[in-house]
Amino acid sequence: GKDLDGTMIGDGIVIASPFGGEAYYKAITGRSFRNGLGIAFNNVEGKRKGLVVGENAKIAVTLKRGHALVSFDNDPKMVPVRKGDRIVVKKARERASILRLR
Image 1 (spheres, helix red, strand yellow):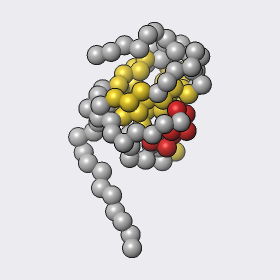
Image 2 (tube, one colour):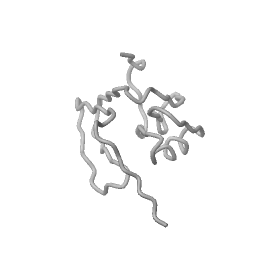
Image 3 (cartoon, one colour):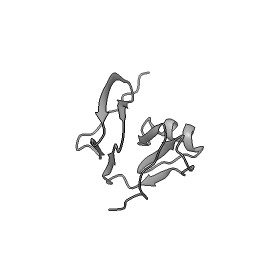
């Protein structure tokens, strides 16, 4: 329900959960988080602080110009996006299982 003020020009954004992706968020912002979703802006013009939103937030990003690639942690495939494409990130209904080996 909140719109960040207009267009941002930069190398990209990282949307991370505390489960694994938090290290990417910390590498950009210098901060950690334990709950919710972290949004970090990588080399954005006019320096922006990272945001942490609730875990049930729906994050929508629209590419305003040019083209880009979307990648996912531990997945070698990248998805091309073009001007006007909208990407929505939200919590999945499924749960992840964590296994510990002894």
